[in-house]
Image 1 (cartoon, rainbow, N blue to C red):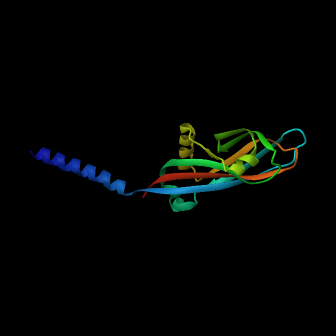
Image 2 (tube, one colour; image 1 turned 90 degrees about the vertical axis):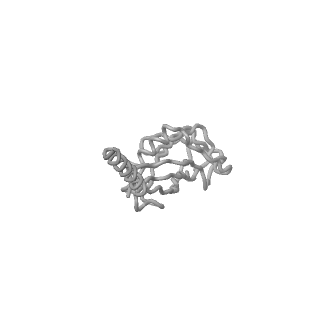
Image 3 (tube, helix red, strand yellow; image 1 turned 90 degrees about the horizontal axis):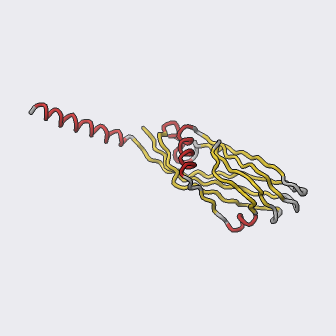
Length: 175
């Protein structure tokens, strides 16, 4: 009988400790938004290459003070848009890639940026493998590098625009 009472007491203590440690865990929602300015010069019959980078600092927003205590990240939504277009409305990005660090999150093929910006087209990232790689990167790093690289064709003049990236995520913080 004493063994059963000791066992029940020990089991209750273990379960209570587990719940106690869960109380020390916070879930913080955060919205990260970053814009990358792109300028493609006038081309003369052949496409011009571009390669732009911008560092996204994870120490911003609601969980800045917790960044060193993040144990998990869940990306709830990940989108990007083209905006603030000026220049040659007939110009296109013939080919390109959008990356976060070494993870490719999107490809571009013969995209008229003027039309995408005017329409407010939202591009969503939903590939589970890509999302998982980004979640791991956010847990292990305090920043990530956004890279847009490719080739554009704009014979009638230059093109300037921004790519705006929106990430809504939930970070698990251990206190």
